[in-house]
Length: 72
Picture 1 (cartoon, rainbow, N blue to C red):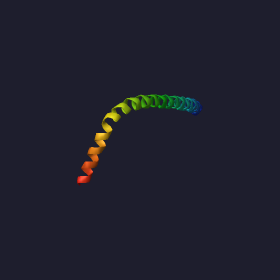
Picture 2 (picture 1 turned 90 degrees about the vertical axis):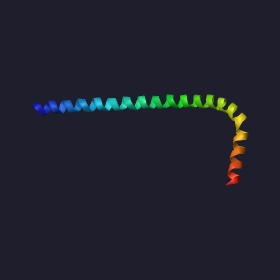
Picture 3 (picture 1 turned 180 degrees about the horizontal axis):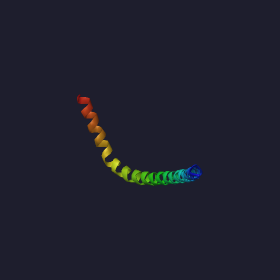
């Protein structure tokens, strides 16, 4: 009699585990999509902000590096 209850318990455990695995896969997929969208939006915002800063400092920064490398 105990083996019957053990088998039923194992079956219920397997079903709940399978449902939980599917649920976790769905949540993981949704999370990945949301993070990708967020990263895309942040990249656009940072590209616009960074392009203004780079335009001011890029010429001097590269020139200094080349002069330093030439003296070695």
